[in-house]
Image 1 (cartoon, rainbow, N blue to C red):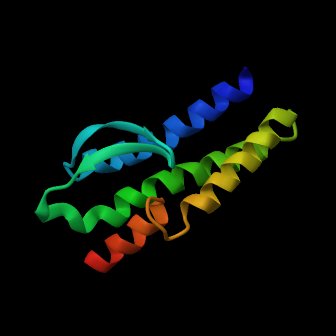
Image 2 (cartoon, rainbow, N blue to C red):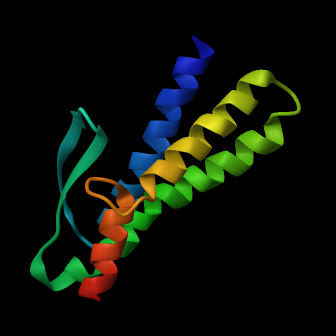
Length: 114
């Protein structure tokens, strides 16, 4: 049960970071989606701020990296935190691959629009 709660919390932190970054650039938040390939915050940027795509996309992986550091530091106290460190590290690596729909694809795309 604790593992499931920590996984859900990790997803919420990652997607929440995207939400905060999107709000900073006045993007419209249209919903939250669960698809076969993962969880998504549905966002809509207007044309004058699409250049911030890479920043909004990078916010989630940065949050996941911070979770990795936190779980690594806590791993000496519990095997559960060690499992969470490895799970978040795996998610971070997969998420940064530059293929759609991963954040890595949006980061690369956003940098090209810059």
